[in-house]
Length: 238
Image (cartoon, helix red, strand yellow):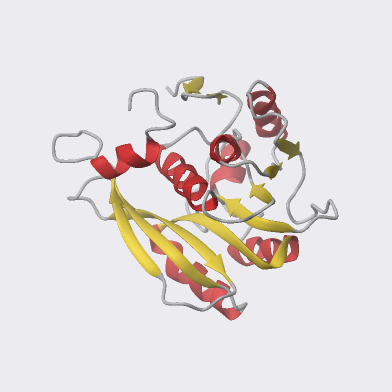
């Protein structure tokens, strides 16, 4: 059974009301994007499908920017609202309980981050909250891209976390809309495992993308140096 909360160095994420719990790949995603944004000049950011609020909190820890988060599920929204309001970053982050397909607060964003529903056509759970969080029955990848493009500035960028087997599909959809991968990180659990997740950053500039990989644990089941370096400002035990 998952813990009801996850303690980070500078904030706590409660998760008992959320179908999607704190997971390692989401933490890598948040840490990588937070580090990337620290080198960019942006004023605001949108987190689509915030869940527990994890990604917004990780970005707020490293960046002095305004954050908006959107969450369609009411229980997850209330959980994220609690996590954000109990953090030292509450003045940086605003949270909205809305469907991203209908969200419009008369604002355009410099950067958008999203950890969208992963599975399309896979076996559904009997729990509606999990279906909504894990399956893109209501938010398909084309609809997600349409929402991103509608909500960010012409020179904006966006970051997405996807299963490895769906990155070609997503990249082709984005290319058709004239958005291209700038940076990509492929994640492995260990060196003996296959890639299971991909982090991609897109913009309208067509460049040769830079691709790297990150292995989470070594042959001794210890976190690798690369993982430690990325997460050391967040994880208590690093």
